[in-house]
Amino acid sequence: MVGKKQRFRTAILVLILAVAIVGGVFAISYFKGGVTFPWQIATAEQEQEQAVTEPAKEEPKLVVKEKQEAEEKKEEPKEEQKEEPKEEEKTEDEAVVQTGCQLDYYGSLHVEDGKLYDEVRNEVRLTGISTNNLSWYPDFASADSIKFLKSNLGINVIRLALFTSDYDGYCVAGADKQQELKKIIDEAVQAATDNEMYVILDWHTLNDANPNEYKSEAIQFFGEMVRKYESNDNVIYEICNEPNDDTTWEDIKAYAKEVIPVIRRVNRTALILVGTPEGCTDLDSALADPLDSDAFGTNIMYTYHFNARTQKSSDRNTLSNALEDGLPVFISQFSYYSADGVGDLDKHEAARWDDLLDEYNLSSCIWNLSNSDEGSALINHSCDKNYDFNYDDLSEQGKHFFDKLSENRKKAEIPEKDEIKDSKEIKRR
Image (cartoon, rainbow, N blue to C red; front, side, top):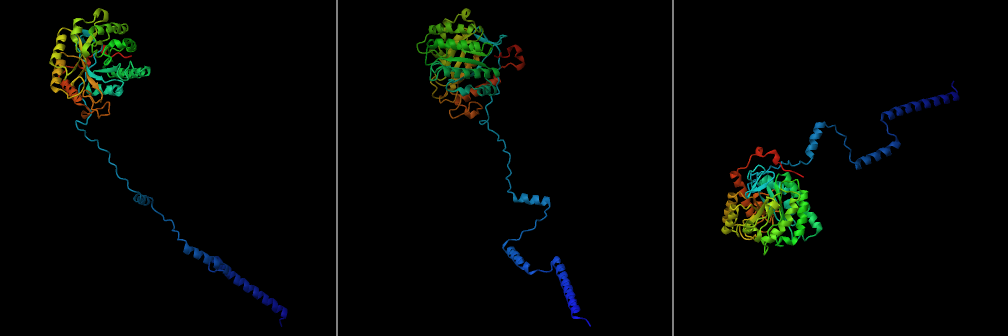
């Protein structure tokens, strides 16, 4: 018979075995996730509540690269296809003017028998434009402007009008202004040289009437200029523009006898232009008593100026008579308007003057390259450019001059480039 002690031990073993079995079952269930313990219930509820309040996060989708890029392109705002601007065809009036004329450079010039010749005695003709006052319109004497005049209009001479006594004039505006004006001249001379053009340094007496008023300044100016441009055979010296009022030929000769030697001491062959009385319309005085060629050299010409609406038949007769008598004349300034620059262009008289210039093969410079409000300005007052002009940018006088150059291209006998000898290439500083 089993004792009490033995039964107690058996009961304990059975209990331990039961606990072990139950613990094993719970352990297996726990690790397999099949059982939730009481302490896990609160945590699960909290997670469930959080899941309700927070939106579910989408799992990242695997997208084929090409498809993804295609969708991104769809989402991007489409850029408007920009068409390249088509170059609009410009009408004749809008296009930059081009005469098709290219007047040549002839090298050193000399005067003989009242005419102008090159080094090998071919008669030459200079055709060009005069600037307005360099103090007022300096941009029209810029390198770009001069290059345009040569390339597009084809002219071969530019006249630089250095006003002496008018507002901001060389002789009245002070030393700083003088330096500024000389810088403008230097740039213009260099541009003319680069473009194989002649350039006239015009001592533009006007309101001072008698050139002797600023004679000492003229001597200093021309002395400096001729030393600076001694090696340039394209520089022409115009020692006085338009002597007027009661200035006589004797006054002009007295002035010339002091100024010309300043030039001749440095350059014995430079071409020199001398103004005549009555605003360069009295050639008879110079014809009757010309400057002594033995003292001042033979390369001297006398200037004549005309305004087609003011000077007419009798004036043309005066000019032609002087030319027939052998006086060397250079038309350093002219216009197709009246002397005061107002009124309309006189086409009838303009044509008659053009014919005379052609008949005698006269060198000339038209007045004036600016957009001033006077009729004789070549550029419209509303135009704010100083080069690259189209036809509508030109004034009535500018259009007439342009048309004349274009017409002359067809008639003029211009030497071919290969006929211009190497010896005639422009001398540079």
